[in-house]
Length: 261
Ligand code: ADP
Ligand code: MG
Image (cartoon, rainbow, N blue to C red; front, side, top):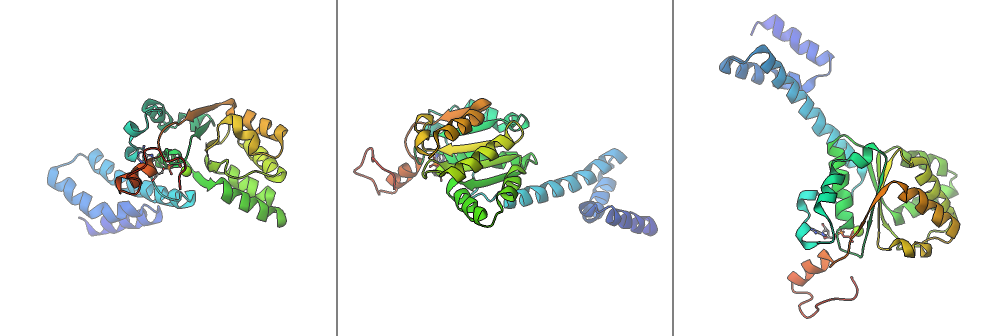
């Protein structure tokens, strides 16, 4: 390749911060010459290298910011094990149309049926489509709210939690929310209403949500906004965790253990 042109191209790629194109230039140019690619094919390959590298970086960054406790995908979910879940409905959610419309998803069911797995898998699918995601458990959120309240930082926290396009709140229902926490949750849900989707998982059905909140009026207001445009999946079935333990021989004698450990 003509040296001054090569140097100029590399310098331009550097100035334009097209670092992957700079890295791939030699190889792609060689391939182009060898296979007699058209100019357009050459440009296509080079741009593709840059876009792929950037997408990969973006996904890695967004995954870090999402704070998932573990990563799971929909491919790893055995729909056959959980017949109460409609695979079609999950695939529909995975198109992320609900995020485009700021709709919510509620995954309800007993422990071990895959609520967190599905919430994370939808989060992972969202990140693949460049959507920002933040995952928190309700208990972590309560901790943070109470700390922030002491430091007068609740408004700032609210702003932070309104930023991601998809907010996942896992494990609602294990702890009661005091009035302050319920008010915060109400503000969070109101601010995100129709703008930013929430995936919420709970071991409690709606009828039992009264127990989660100290304040019934706030509980109704929260449910009202949360459910207005939403999809609820009621998962009934056996715990996958216990099946794994059964397979490992821990529960050989038990057919239907009453409580999960
Ligand atoms: P939950 O949040 O409902 O308590 P999890 O999503 O944490 O349940 O599931 C418990 C474990 O079992 C996780 O490791 C999850 O990946 C796995 N799991 C649950 N259901 C399925 C399933 N149908 N197919 C594959 N793995 C599953
Ligand atoms: Mg869970």
